[in-house]
Length: 326
Image (cartoon, rainbow, N blue to C red):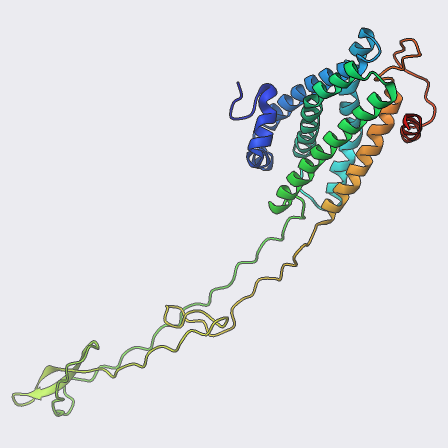
């Protein structure tokens, strides 16, 4: 059974159905060791099963050795190319850790391995019904290529999520706190003395404003309080979009509103560009290592051998196989 962290072989189900939680777990660096271990075990078992189908074209012994060599091919390629990916990101200021980079690449390898093993019944069908060496070899090379392209698509998608969280860009400089000017104390109010000359009473007019107290002479020089209206204030000016804050609110600011720096659409950090270069490097290293570890299929006219002599290259062999097929 799968858990919240995607344990066992069913980790692929979580990657395919809930990939956003996988990306978020990698961003937060939560239990990456456990997640990477599950993906490693899942991909190794899946690649071993598919390798056994490849080697079954020749013999049982070849099937056993291919079941070991195919997982080894992917893991050794990862060990060779992972430091390059990590250093590429460091050079351009990315804050991606080694654990995060490893988890991202393991997602791609896990998807590739699971898609390849999903094609295993089709490969086995053609092995039984049309046991042609050239056709069987090209068919499985096409299956592995297609599976790898889908897996690398997951890798680029995950890296884009990390880029949205700022992990592929240099750390932003610390913001300088704005200086708040000290409040200017209000001028003290001037109070008329009680001995001031008497003034005439002001008629009271009902208004909604807050009344003010005005001294008046009553009963031979004694003063009393008479309520006088305050002048009606004009309504606040209409808010001008893009200039200052709302004048009706407290803390009116008359200057221009601070603007955010413009963000250019389609802007891509250098680390994302280098990711595509790294993918090409990963492909070249993987194909050359596969040529070094051959045979995986086993030519029907030759005896079993664990390894062949290193001569030629992978691409020349594919072209020669296509020519032999047609």
